[in-house]
Image (tube, rainbow, N blue to C red):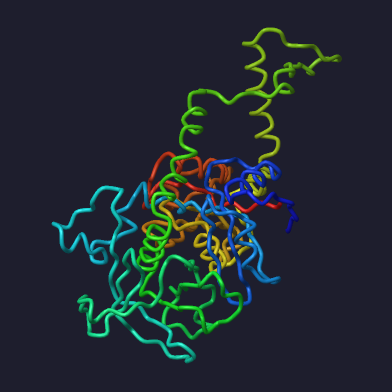
Length: 397
């Protein structure tokens, strides 16, 4: 779905995300992002929180649009830098006792990339260096001597984009394509610097380092701004109830006429009995459809579509969704991201004493519904490589 929003000239991407969170009744967990999407060129990138939306829109074509979605990886490199900057790609790890320096330093990234030759369909494998002054390639093997380095792109007037369907559009050698696009370019493909990495981890490393070089301390400030508010919220041990909730009273309708239950112990006992009765009475309904109300359940999507959604929302450890199984109509699949790799676990129904359960470890651990299963693995790793942390969420604006 789309929504037209009138915004002032000084509205930042973070401001607009918070407005959309409010209008869409979402939970504001600081992981929402505004995505600049160019369908004709097959490019997209997440706006930084401080960027002015009007300025970004001025460089977009009529076919381009903004997308509102989750991006859990936006600031993950501050929390877990080692997973974003592999030792073999970072110059300071190779030349300074293989340790990551303090957070105010910048990584010099180096390694092989495929580069699309300008005006041609062919790709060339070159040894690249990303520094504060720009992206360079070596004209002589892996040499980093200044006389052998040639500038390919700078950071100042460019942005870095993920390329969608790169193999189809550009005959890319791998699936891990990205692009450096000058801000002045609207539709001219020849002005784009198309690059391709060997795997997802190296692509993420190059793109994250580019953002650090371009925006510097601004990224860290964007990351730290929401923290005080989250700390303030965490002081409340229980959620704040609304006025309408506080006005509710417990009622007993077991007799001919209803009565208000004044005794809190009796009220709690009645609530537990009602819950148990509802579960017994509605067991078949509960078993079959209760999970469809959950944000992490995506229904009948394909394996490939689940990969696309996970990739869009950040590929951080613990990012997950549940979907219907394509091979078994009675089963479900847990799709989980761990170490930037996507894994699938089949959830099978099993019967015991006439009651149906769900399990993803061949019946060792059983659950009456998928909500129980998800809540368990959010607290316990079990047979999974990591706990479930971040649900893949899609909202209608």
